[in-house]
Image (cartoon, rainbow, N blue to C red; front, side, top):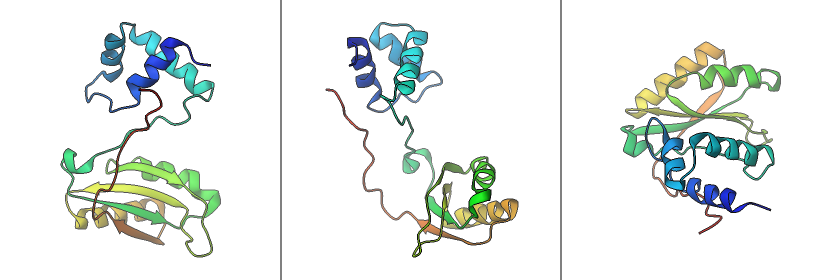
Length: 155
């Protein structure tokens, strides 16, 4: 069961966060509470499993990137965490995550790479490959943005 304050906080974060140096401060001010109370309540909601995922979506077209590619990497399971940390450290990477490979699709690590053009994405993937010593990968370029919406739990 959520308190009235918790419900108000969920409503406040279920849309886009303000693009400022202190987005939580603005949300807290709009709710009439302190930033510390907002952050402590969000932490409690996460710890209790009410909020399972809290992430950001990069609208690359609006941020100046003209190209992006999902790079699928074939990485041995015992190296996945270490390689993921290497990949996530690249400034061109906005997402890095692990999935189970299948017989038809042997890739287990995925990174979203952003650049000014497709050549830049390829060059970044090549540098990532060399740094992590992973040579089996494929680039899947975005052609069209289909949907980016936040979940709405309360109105």
